[in-house]
Image (cartoon, rainbow, N blue to C red; front, side):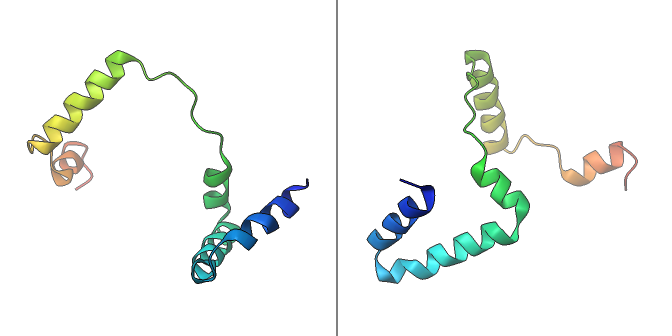
Length: 81
């Protein structure tokens, strides 16, 4: 079955009150090439190594504790302010 026929079949199953939302999503994707590219990009299939999970968890915990560097300070350090 062609993709357009599959899409029409799916649209026939969408409740009427949700069609406006789908219209806005599709129109938005068509109006923004970058958004369309992101929406159609393949899923990331790279493994998520344990060391990266640990580092990410530590970074999130630091941010939750407020142990971050203010944006203005970083800009000053790089001479951008």
